[in-house]
Length: 181
Image (tube, rainbow, N blue to C red; front, side, top):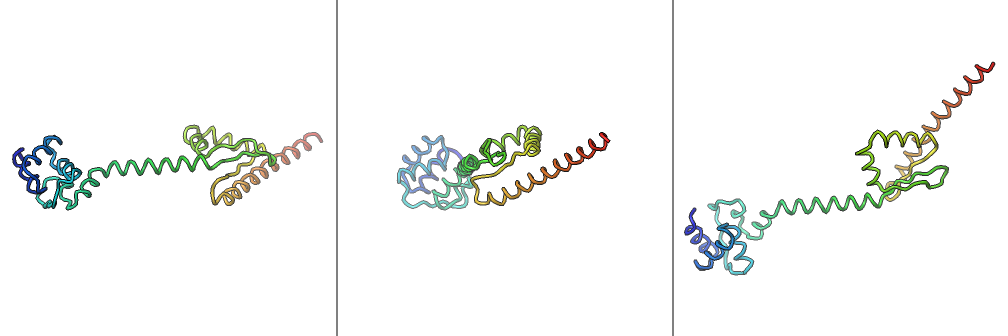
């Protein structure tokens, strides 16, 4: 479509003069939709009549606001994703994993730090967690509405490890007694 046809089309669809249509198209690098939106923002549109024979999908919308929303939809998705991610980071900083020994708090880490350790240093974090359990440390979660059920499960895991350690100690004691006889 050449420039003259675009000017005539915009003029007829937007009910503006040919000069206004040409000026709007030149300002927007001959983008018909952008020119239409510019005219709308300047409130020069009287009755917008877009038909199905337009070339752009966004132009097929009967409402210029819908066309603007369609044009900025990827931006809206990215913005919503970033807001959701920021909310998750904020919530992760509010939730704390506490490391205790004999009821005394030894260390409190935000959940985000623990997740980063698990992602980047999985085996080290897993090994350190198991060693801490063997040496009598307990882990509790604070800051979630269901933290008690999680804490109960972590306490059961701690007791399980304690039972394994005690049974290993009792076997070693029994073996030592047999060797000394």
